[in-house]
Amino acid sequence: MTSPEETDRRAASSTSSRLSEDRFYDALSSVQRRRVLYHLLEEGETPIEELATVLTGWEATQGGTMSTPADHTKHYLALHHIHLPLLAEAGLVAWDRESGAVTPESLEPLVREIVRRSVEASRS
Image (cartoon, rainbow, N blue to C red; front, side):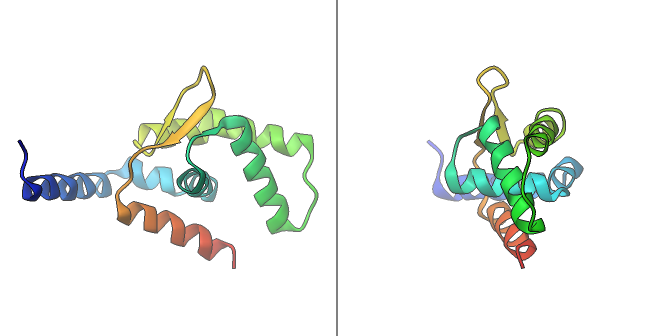
């Protein structure tokens, strides 16, 4: 049986390990990927189709424009070929390519806070 102190040490080590990995920062370097994580942290498991819709709406709202089906397709393809593979490789999401379901991995409070603050700051 693991003591509470050991559990805390392992969690701290996991956070430190993740924060020292370049792929973690590569994954968070895109506002689109941070928005995906933000949505997943707020809503939980989400189909890739819905994530494309969310990103399309977010972009249209920020730009004060109307979205088009082409915008949705652009976001869907970017999610499928770029964003979700990077987030999954960094251990930030689980993505079932067959069903299209995207689920946030268990993220440390510090990572959650970084994602939340960066997305909320970009809204201003």
